[in-house]
Length: 89
Image (cartoon, rainbow, N blue to C red; front, side):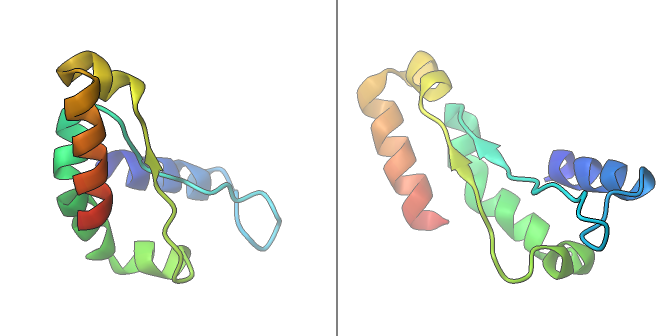
């Protein structure tokens, strides 16, 4: 979650705002097996930050990757981890 907040802070420091049309979406990527297993807690940490909640306008986008988790744990375990992570999120 700190990576997402760091990117948002950098955008703020460089004047990238929704008002001037330069604000980019910051989307967390959960790809390794460890990332997938911890994704619900990471999102909960993000949602506990009031300024983050205000910046996403009630919409959360996430990326769920496959290749790194397949390398970590094999294809079957990676597929299962993706499924359980998505259900938990």
